[in-house]
Image (cartoon, rainbow, N blue to C red; front, side):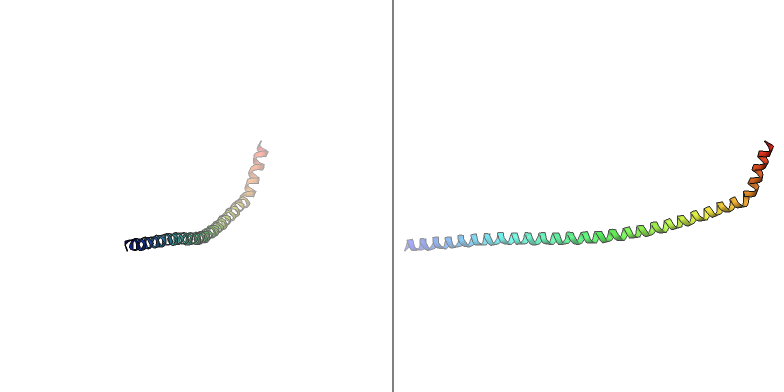
Length: 108
């Protein structure tokens, strides 16, 4: 009888050991699946972050472009106004300048 109880205990222990090995294997598989899911989520979030950053960069670039275009237009208008003013001054004083040059040349 003692042998059959010992044999039963050994069989039970072997069954528990097999169960533990099976659970360890399942836990290993679950870890792999969890790591794979985590990596997929990381990849998805990284892609979304890149898309958001690209869109934000485009908004900033477009705003800068519009500002630069506006500033360029303003500077161009100011330049045209100054050029017009200078041309006006030249036209207004041209006859007097010619008289002054002729007078200076004739005196020499």
